[in-house]
Amino acid sequence: MSDAIVAHTAKVGFRTNLISILKKICCCFYFSQSTKPQKIDLGPPIPGKKTLVLDLDETLVHSSFYPVCNYDFIAKFKVGENRYSSYVLKRPGIEYFLEFVKEKFEVVIFTASVKEYADSVLDVIAPWIPPSRRFYRQHCTISNGLFIKDLSLFNRPLSSIVIVDNSEFSFSLHRSNAILISTWIGEKKDKQLDTVVGPLLSKLIDAEDVRTVLAKHKLE
Image (cartoon, rainbow, N blue to C red; front, top):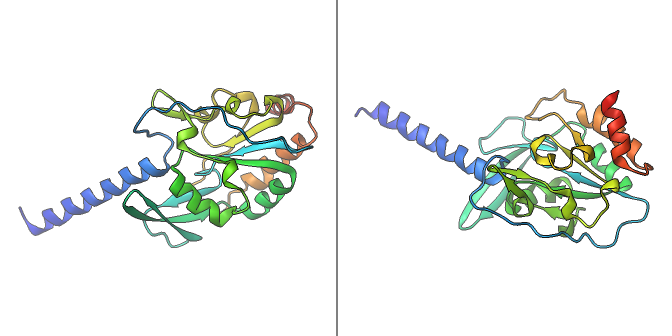
């Protein structure tokens, strides 16, 4: 076997291994074992505030294990004995959006990613979200090999909880409580947080039932 073939084979193998790692750490379409999530206690409701459940990857940020020229920061974390570095891009408008929801909602992060990776990102973009309101892969329900975020696990009435996610399957149990955002993988001109999600969330702040407002919006 020639040196060129050996080098190419090694390169392909390395790339395949990295892709596999990425899927295991922060992809919603991979799981290694079954989980049976328990009820989640968020503590007493915050008077006057709806509960906003936010997805992380491809909703708020995009991460890559390969260096990219326009990354915003590097998230370093450890899983088991292995250390990783992820190049993270922040979705346009994320700073203003997070400041807005921080003031108006009880903000919860619910991601299908592993805790170590998710926390390394959240500690940069939203360090004000406490550990008690961060939920990860182990809190997801698995169906047909995919992760579902079951809102009924939270001790909050469904009339006052809304989820923002780029995967329809993630909120398939509670579509009437969901705002579907487009999948973001680095488009600089994206304005979904500013022009779609933010304005719609504003309508939910004083709503008696978020599902009624969201249903009306979907008919428009």
